[in-house]
Image (cartoon, rainbow, N blue to C red; front, side):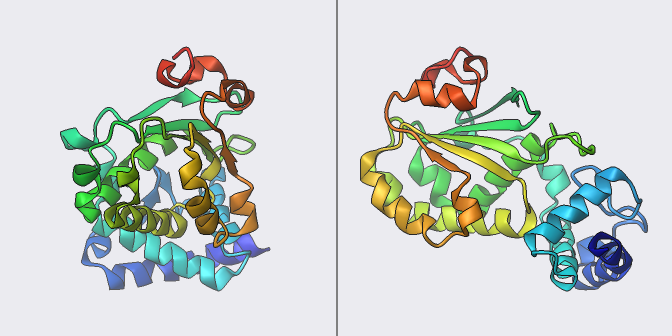
Length: 249
């Protein structure tokens, strides 16, 4: 069984991470965790985490083990567990909401791009990546990591009020950077993504970007136009959607 094979490879993957990072090497033996789940202890929760890496690498045990190594290094070097509890600079505040979970237990993460100061939010690439990673960590905290429970998130991206400044190269660079981080170190967490109040002018650039993604990823995207509240509520109850985009929360 692939999961058993990956678990056998885990000590070597952890040892390799500790060799590759002074921050990782400082972690105590048996103390490697991801999203509060101890990896080295065989539990349903650690099985779920390992399976995410396996599925992301299409059941290639060698590639899954290497990705785990790199994620351990990433989380240690970037102090991700501390980041999850950190305060954000003011220009990153009040754009994002995690109102709870949907009826299937999937955490809901809502981001409203229209009110952002684009120059400040995207001006420092490393700070932008840390900001988005913190939000992802905060949303994942609502997952139970239990058999049969939800394993991914629902994201809403609200584009009402977005200006042409979203075309800036800094924005493109930030989106590409965080997409890479999420793809490499947050495997199989991205569930359905709803693009709300999506401007028609963005459609062609978005389609070009989407064409580069795997089909199973594209199928998770739902694009909704201006005021398309009825379709939005087919995916999320009004009580979980902020008033600013037509909901009751």
